Length: 356
Ligand code: ASP
Image (cartoon, rainbow, N blue to C red; front, side):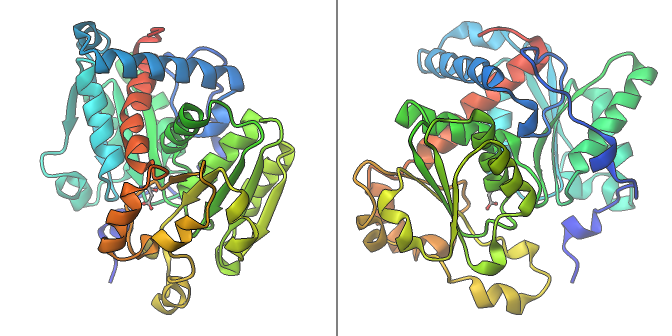
């Protein structure tokens, strides 16, 4: 049976991936769509992370001035796929900055998408009412298509709403990678010399695609990326190529023991069940990599365990979740909270360009 996300695939048959190149940030965030981590230079990352750290501090101090930053601005959410953290953290981020949030009353499922309206029209409708739109969609390059049509909308309404990609199928999840990198830097100070180990479904996991590309862009000295997955779920060639261009040594293996003991960052991921056409293919590999308290015992004392969440059985049964959570090396809740601060910084920057 088709899922809602598949039914909702109402895209034009144009290859937007070759047609639309996301704008480079180059120090100027105002009005720029955020669609890929490839838009960011080292310097752009520094600007964004300084702003994120400042907003984190000011939020902790209950600084009332924060609500002036996006006052009078509206963010629309268009989620064609399920989300907890991306959706809620963007909403919370906008509200903490004094902005308003709109969305179809009962979710996209009950918008005119139900009547068969296509993505181009849905996103332009949102653009008529909002200053910034966060889009999650099951198809790769859907955010490029949405940005393309928002650019066209400018001719009609005299302003161009900004699109922020919130995950496009197995493609990219830029704001997740930004919050992941911010969290790594927050915990470790620098990525220089780190062994970053990504484990699980590296083929379909958009968070690891974006994070690996971002690490390649940062070009840390002595960074190694270990890609641990079953052979059928390897990191896509395009991502491997970018790491090679960034001169990042990559170890690809299906044997976690080869790299676990040397890893400072362990980035665990879920097998993306919803991306498998055949149930049997999922069943064959779903138990390949299960994090357990015993396994974590074998990791370095100064390692950090990250996960974009949601977690399922790849983090063991719920009883084992509780034990893992108590380990100080498990930092996925900090990662989650940082998501809100990094998204506050993104919203502040693209809407106002302010240096917060
Ligand atoms: N929440 C993340 C994403 O949307 C990770 C996941 O779903 O496994 O990609």
